[in-house]
Length: 262
Image 1 (cartoon, rainbow, N blue to C red):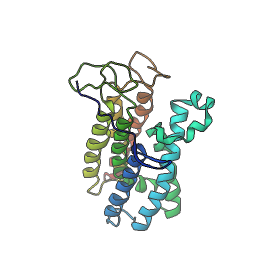
Image 2 (tube, rainbow, N blue to C red; image 1 turned 135 degrees about the vertical axis):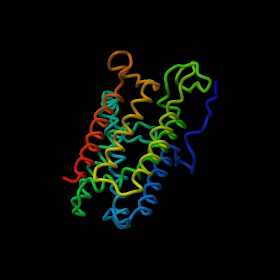
Image 3 (cartoon, one colour; image 1 turned 60 degrees about the vertical axis):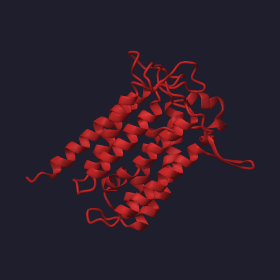
């Protein structure tokens, strides 16, 4: 068994102002998206320039934070926030939903598509490889916060998480960081490094994330106030990820079907 590193969730304390590691992880994700976006801007297979990347980051920050928080409240803990509505604003305590952030990002991409008069899938194909480092950073933030831990296990790398009882558990946050972050980034980044049919990169990202998340859900402890949805293994994460997998595979199919010469 490994010892869980007791990392102070507060990275920097400036008098009454506390800067949390969880918030810094979001900053890492947005910074990575910005620099990766500027690196890829101007390629011959997309119509975007550095000005678009600046707009993308501005609207992306708003959509991810608002969508992620609203999604968590609606999908995972609605009754709790009805009792304490002001807790919605305590984002430094964690509680962000990827699926909510994805819906928020989709709205931002729709807005940018109208503004720049391009197809929304041109934008989503450009954005998809850029957001994955943010997923990796977010899971590291979950690990530092000691939240979203895994199920009880006796594997050699199990850890006892503060607040999760005395039993060793899977460090599922690190599993997600590896699958949804490192592996997915490598696959989508190198796949998108060459021109692909429109919708293909988006489809690969959606299907890849859904598969990675669904896999880790078998090791992750379901939220205590929700538990298993059915069969003692089906979780809310599974239910939200399956449509992503199906839609991603559909986009891949349509992308290559339309790319075939008649």
